[in-house]
Length: 99
Image 1 (cartoon, one colour):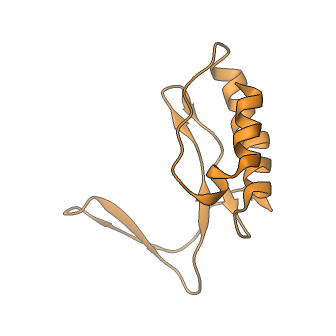
Image 2: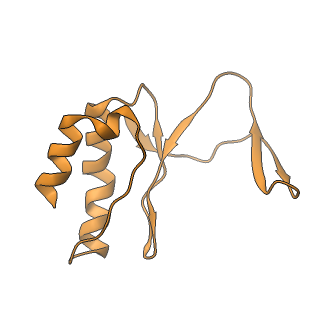
């Protein structure tokens, strides 16, 4: 299941030397997803479960495709890393079907 992120409270420390922010919280980790481009960004999405191909396709369909349609009517280049959900045949078929 994915949902739009709500503000997360926690202690934020920014390292000037390394230029990154570190948020300390009690408990486990948090996975978020977003896409950025010259024209803006998608919503920040919290991934609550394992990100398999089905959940990834839901996220692309609900958040990425509307962003593309609004900002890139002529098409664009979409890049992603080599995560298994990105490489899944379902994902490839989905993206090629929208190309």
